[in-house]
Image (cartoon, rainbow, N blue to C red):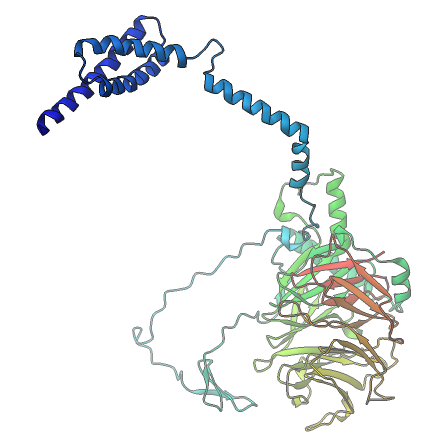
Length: 580
């Protein structure tokens, strides 16, 4: 019985397929199109299978006729009408029309567009300067294949011998490794600093732009050093009255990394800002040059060099003058007038000489990492400090230290500043202490004239430029203080509350005096600059900010000596110049 049932089922399937094929033939003969015939074939197949199940006992001869009749019924009910749509499609279109009418009545489309519109974000950081320029490709010298001395039959050098002993008791081996008294052995450091004089070959400009800038700098500074020095005319009263503003053309990225120091050139013929960053780069920005370039392009004036992107000059050029963190970057006085004095953690002190077109190496020390520097007004001498608390007296004319280094602090010296009103006195800031020294009494185991204790680390200590003997300090205990050490060294004469918690990624704030010494300026965590009165503990006299153009925290500041200009450097390497 099982075999008979299986055979009967197979025969029924074949017959239903044949019925569907016959129905397709009948529909085609009746004038039905090919797509309609296919529909009829499918429906006929379904109808044939059902009919076989229900009328299994009927005669096989009657199946083709019944199948043809079922296919004709399907064609009548389901085939495409005169409008080209089936009944299901017509019902779907009507449903869509009803929903569309409801949405229009409820004004849903307008509300949806309003919700989808986002508020316009603040302006992106300025791309002026090195951010928008190509970096000059460097040709790397091919390195020969290394071969051992033994393979070349060369006697081995005394790699484990002693080269020299340092002051702290550590020993430098011949291969550059360092052995400490504690038994620790460190590998030789990889030296990346430039050696000797560094030419003014910028990292982002072309030979043409470099040559043009050197020529401009040479002419400008050559005339400047021949003129008499002008008195300081910029003041806080003028700044607050003029309401300094920040324009887009006064923002530029001048160094690849965060700005550590910056200063305005005293030459009024060219608005030039010098800056140093964390990796030893020195940036020089001709602010008005950037403005001129942008205005020329906006007017549609085309020059012969417009087709060469490499030769575009927006006023920003930067140089690899040092191999580490820049600890000082300031335009010189006296014999150094018209020159830029720099120092860095790579143990070098350099002077930018526009006449020669080089960063001249004044002194270099392999043992020291210079963390602070300042020069005397005659330009013949300078004080240099390092990150282990030593003080060095440098003769700028000979490029040599005039005496052995003196250990005056136990930890890194953050700043050193000579009093403009009395150059025998200078101040140093370090961990929880600001000290005032007399340069005439410097000797071994010298004692400070005044010690000004602080609750936390003091990041800076600067004398008032007007020569009044007031000392401004910045401390991590959220306070800016004004001291008069010669009058009272036990307590500050003014304390200004200020949030100095910059965190890990922002350089610590260093409050500065205005050029005339009548105000105190400091960066803010709100991406602004505050101006305070150094005589009275009152809220800020003025706040300079720009939500559109100042997109980072300006932790390092500089004031122009003759104009009401203030520059702020950020951790992104950008400089913002506020002016009326």
